[in-house]
Length: 155
Image (cartoon, rainbow, N blue to C red; front, side, top):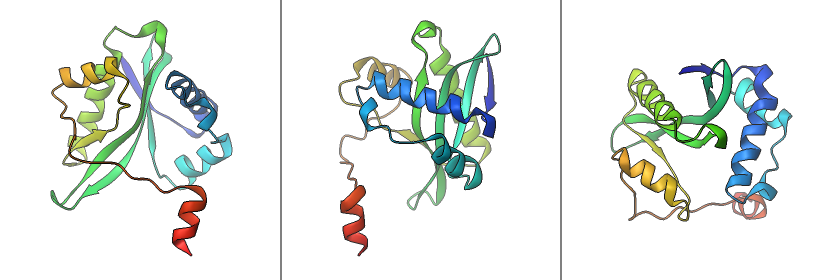
């Protein structure tokens, strides 16, 4: 198993992975990101990073992540926004190896934690994360402001 960080020329591939993941999650109609958006945010602004998992020199999975911060720990953390493995190679340990690599990156960067969200209905992923001893954060509720509601609050 090999890994490589995405480069600017990978933007079309990154977007295709995002759309495959969204389709898997039944959320494809919510993807509005464009190649230009990704190029700007990932490479010009460096807001997040993408790591590809490769088998036989072919990208078969990806993780998009960025740094967050824990005031309680006094350290940055890694937040995993997206993790996706192509269906034809699932069950071969690629997801676990990709998470292992992210954990190594987190430790190399002196991060205090690695965290992510998982859809409630995705029992396969939930079982996988629990097998890694990941802890569900059941006492926390996520909130979000987007679009017009975000603009309204900012006024």
